[in-house]
Image 1 (cartoon, rainbow, N blue to C red):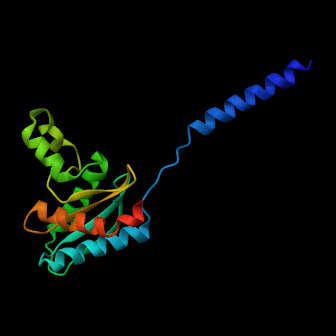
Image 2: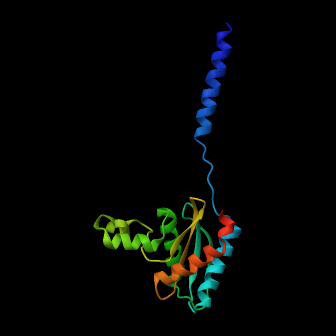
Image 3: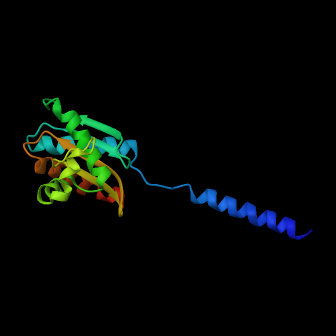
Amino acid sequence: MTRYPLATLVATLAVSGAAHAAVLSESNISSAEAQKLASATVAACQAKGYHVSASVVDRAGLLKAFARADNAGPHTIEASRAKAFTSASAKAPTLAIMENAQKNPAAANLTDIPGYLLLGGGVPIKAGNSVIGAIGVAGAPGGNLDAQCADAVLEENAALFK
C-alpha cells in the first residue's frame, strides 16, 4: 500500500513539470520605452532635415508606438510599420535583408512574405542577444539614412537594453 502514494506523487510531479516546461518567459520592449524611441528617432531625423515616421514594434512585430514628423508623407506611416515588422520578424536590419535578397537568388522570394518590406530603415532592438522589438523609419531620402537615425537613437539608449 505504501507504493501507491509514492506513485501518485511521482506522477503528479511529472505532470506538473511537463506543464511548466510549456510556459515561456520572454523579454519585450515596454510601451513607455517604445514611445520614447519613436519620438527620439523622429527628432534625430528632423535634426538632419528629414521628415519621417517612426514605428516601434514588440518582439512579435506588433505596433507598440508611433511618431510622425510634420510634413512626413502619408506613405511613411505604413512603410515605417512594415520595416519594423520585417526587422523584428527576421531579427535583422532590413538593409541587410534587402542586400541579401538582391545578391542571393534563393532569398529573392522574401519579398513575397506578407507584410515584409525589404527597404533599409528597419533595425532590431536587442536586450543582450535577444530581439525585444524593432524600430522602423521611413521618409528620409534613402533607406540607409532612415536606418542611421534609428541606429543613432539605439546607440544613445544602449544602457537601457543591457
